[in-house]
Length: 267
Ligand code: FES
Image (tube, rainbow, N blue to C red):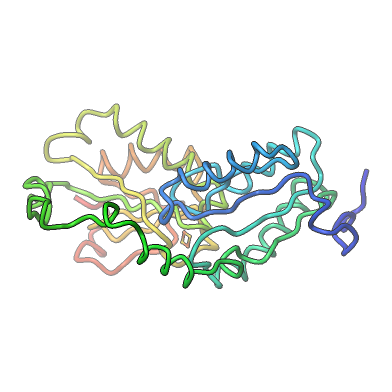
């Protein structure tokens, strides 16, 4: 078995890496752009380019790494492709990836992070190209019907509770996405949670701050924060909290002060 720290030194150069993970931000690129870039680069055939998303959707970077591990790959270069880059996320990423390689690959995985692509982009030149675009590519807004939004966007939906499920980058790294999907799937099949007085909404949220307690969600207006979620806890939150009004005490990591604080169960 390889010793911890193997493949962790400064031996191979980035150009030796045959697998390149494009680490993008779903909130900015709406998924398809990173996948399209990977497909385009894969067509060149010299390396394998794999997309991974920081937040909101998957696959997350641990999903991709575990897949590589199963296929016997022990080297990969991570290229942050989000634009603009997130310096805070960049500072966190190396430690999180090293934690992953020690826990899941016994240290036998050479993982490196390239500089963010934004350092190599000439945005000023791109702006000049946009300004110089052919006249037929300049869309006159006067030709479009004036509107600020669809009529339905005015109505506030009635919900007894709102669930804010964190799919920020650090929770996504802790596998929040399949848990969010699990929760949505269960809720969809429970009629009282979809109509009537117990109707509940479950939406994705960006970072809610206590990342170390992730995966994490908040149930409002009850002010209950649940952390370190797993499938069993999710199922209990749906059944006991959303349906029966009784928070799952063992999974609570924080409670906001609410008028119901001293009354036990939330009605
Ligand atoms: S990413 Fe979920 S709390 Fe920060």
